[in-house]
Length: 278
Length: 290
Image: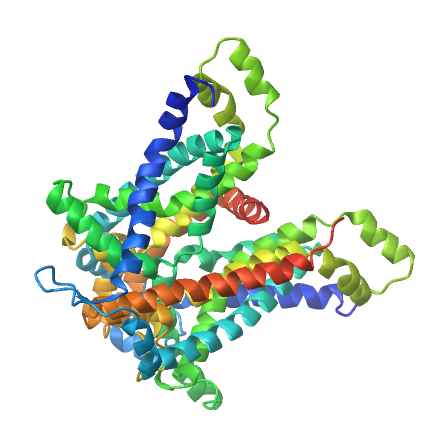
């Protein structure tokens, strides 16, 4: 486009990027201020850098416990999703019959169901399972993982299915002739080939599960089981007025995300792009 | 299916199908059933069959109708705003600028932070930073606490949602732009097409698949918004930003109207499905083959 000179585009993009990052600046500077200093000027740099409010926020949020819960729930859910949905998608893609088509179409169709449509009956059903079958679905991290896996299966199977369809079948046939079992064919030959789409599936699910608030809020009531979004919610319920403390708390919740982003940045951007165009 | 293969088929698909059925399919069916009953959610209390009464009652629920209007308005504004910002960013980021990579990273960042936390961050900015800027610059007609104003609170939601989603949409548009072969653009350049002509006649038509996905994602997530709504405005002031998802949550778990709330939730599903499918159908038709 010749409408804008290269120089002005450079400036425009720089300003946009700065604008997108400006809230982070605001959180950081105010997380070091006393309440009085914060109200004097919310934009100024702090007079001194003391981690006093971080320590306080960390304790009041139960941050370490929340971090541990979030990590446990997210990692385990995503691992189970990757294993189960890749296996399911492979079978559905490679078995060309009506049953497979119906199952696949059901996965696709349910992607349109909003969580709000399912939340009440899901809670009722989980209550029944807890009471009748004595499997504790509420107030256990494993119960929540079970539900996360269920909700993530549609999109994950959909992504894997599309990718598998583009892989030629000949390799699998050759391995079968050589005497490999289905299990062997999948784990030794197919699964390694799925790596690009596995990265996409993992990233999409990590973002969704890590940030999810509503489902944990309905299933976890025990304070010690709270995830990061949950503990943030309760923290704000109690300390809304102390904004300096709140800023330190918010900064704490952002730090793990920033670390994840820095470590996996290349994969995240590529994974999101590939997940979208599939 | 050949004999012996059935066992493998079950082994590979059954675990996920059991979980998926328990979490999604059965609740969906039970959900439809509940929507025909009047019930307060307490197991010991009777479920009274009321037929389609719950659905008819929706038309008398002024607060629900208002939330329908707010959700529609929010969705329209949000979809336009997110896609304009996202597409502009994608065009700039792909035009070989020195800060392109850094900018792409920064603009995508908010998407990772998550709606609930973003809402709290912006609550503080509207409350303290906006009023501060207003008093420093004297532009207090623009910089004031939007969250306290019945009309501006909705714009604040659009603003924060755009801030969250623009980077995500940008990534999709980048993927689309990079998929356009260079020789087509070169050929047009040689034929003397201006930058704007090339954008309008080549880039946009070939970007149609990216539009389909971006519109689908922004449309459905704007329509289903909950987290940002909860932490930024909590539905206020005076219910002026109570979106669909929050209205349903409040009806069921806030007021204990399980049957009526579930009827709303079923309607919610049909509306989401109808809107997104229509959009995908329309934009798909405009996609061109290379």
